[in-house]
Length: 251
Figure 1 (cartoon, rainbow, N blue to C red):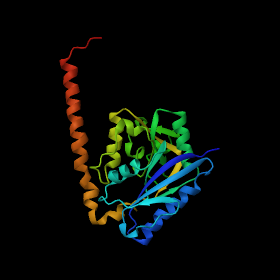
Figure 2: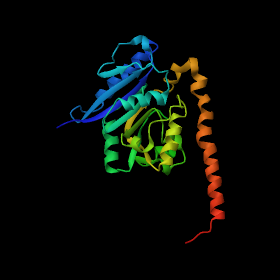
Figure 3: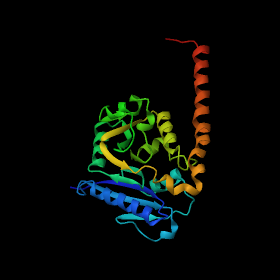
Figure 4: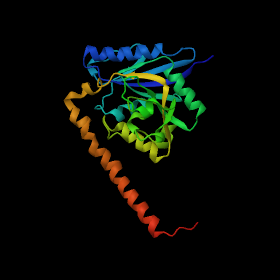
């Protein structure tokens, strides 16, 4: 039996030995999480600390992009250098639990309309409507959107990029997931939270690597997001409102 190949793209900034160890432990937990005869992970690490080059994380291909770090920019580099049907876009501060990937693949196989999904994080403060909800929770089933789509581990069918294009590189860190969410909405694509798939996110570890540019990379991204989506959405709602009143309904 040939193992199903899954691309794992991990963004790492190991500016200290401790942060390097976090990436190593994420990779170790990844390879322990699935039967390698059934699912084979092909891991690409994009390491921002060029001083580590040419170090290769165990069982990975590790590259050191020359471009200045940008969350979506680096993910796009990873997407361009991988080829398998399924691809997972990951922070480095993760612990992968048993069968996390196989549960996501099973969900996408049983529900072909789902092309994008998140695993469930045991440490995340989900709203009780999510905690008590179904095992597979589609984004439109709850108003608590941030708990359904989170950017630290997004698992997709590669074919989704044929529809939405590559990720918007103006988003360097925060609001990258919000932009992705709104892009899926624009193209009417489903996203799901799969609660049987478990990946622990070690909260704030990624944020702490950005202290020298934290304002620019976090709250500084809000204006870009609002300029792209919220103002456009207002104009779209206004035009829809006007059209509903100016164009006669012909039923």
